[in-house]
Image (cartoon, rainbow, N blue to C red; front, side):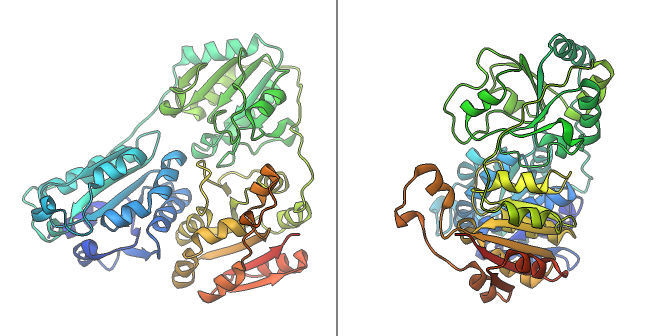
Length: 494
């Protein structure tokens, strides 16, 4: 049957699928070999978040199975997040029987149109002979930089048919975004012509494992380093002398921080990912950006060079001149959780941290620092991502620590069921602000509409998860991290 060939094809990339099946996926499940794992999520979107977490651990294509029009629609927020995170996912959605699509039966929808705005591509198989070809096309598209999710819709009746075309060839898809050596020299010459240059680095440093090349470039050039606003992965892990901190949430504040530099060099990230766009960023200043993401580069008014940042840094280090180091630290106000995160920093080194504490993200990063491939958040500002992403990471053998607010926790706690069922080394620290503290802080509104009071540890317990609430944060963190068991601790902040 075609279904068997589908799994043969998928096994080139992975041994697992994350999904939430329904009636239109039953024929797909029948073809699943015992060696292929299916991780059940209790919500369609959560399955997408899990697959993204798997990619973060393994750097492999994540595969998701969604249920027809309702399931695909239900997962749109997570799919859009994966698109903005530039995570390669293959989304396989079940469709109603190909013979009766014109009748638009229950569960039917124009899946390609639904998925189109949030994916790199969306396709629907019209015959059994098209399925493997489309899966091959979709997987190649997902794995072409900039990475992203691609959807393939497969009508349920096709899975039970025999494909007449033999499509057993293995997929070979190698993309190399080489840097033009003359362009590298041009950029470095421009850097060398300025006395005061700031370097802004982003998530691509972690994606391409360019930390060593970046650190070499920074030391040779004597350049101050800033993390892009809302960096989703560790952008820097070198000598702290050169690291000036994370750029602020407002574009006007970014302008103030970088005001005294005559040139800004952006490598592997973006200056546009701000929460409050209240001013034109770096207007009138010389800015050059290096990124592998042509979609990001096309949006910017300054000079952009699309190539692999790791290769750029390796070549640029040969030509960079030593500058007189002049750094301006990003100022941060004290936070009520500083002591908690400082205590956490001494206990959490064995875990990759998944950050979803909107009120305290700067405090968390200041305390824990940046470790390569060990700090993750999402670039979309999406709420509910961290728990399923951490499970996907842990399901692939990683150790995950989720630091999350009570507001964020309530968006995707169903993923704890999957964690409890399938296992994995996971810890959860819930900072309970009794509501949406970040919104209260930015708006000054005290209305109780921003203060829903919940008890996350009780929800976790309802799924069989070991969970407790503590007033003493030291005792709570010690209990949480004292062993390898799955645990959740809730700390209430006044």
